[in-house]
Image (cartoon, rainbow, N blue to C red; front, top):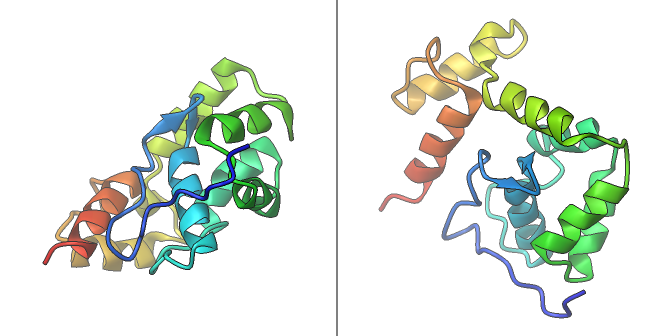
Length: 148
């Protein structure tokens, strides 16, 4: 594993899109960016091992602390993917793709427990909460957070 911790400074730029896939896994690139930035003290308002990250960690039945330990050792994106492929619940490429499609299409507006929160957040971002996904909102929120 690499000995140099390379990270995005999330006080100055957003993590990768939640849609970006690494090794087929949705959310992984974003979680890695947040984890590395957290270790460097540059996570800003982003949180590693949050409910969003835990969609993926729960799907694979791994712990955020274990992923964080890899990142502390300087693991590359590819090394994290390799670890994820060999730890936790075994998943086929079809299961990983189906999970990605499901999570990418998630609409908090349709979830009674999340609706009020999402209506407030999406509306603040100028979005129609009844028409957008969580990922649509996250991407707009990320962009708005770093506009001058």
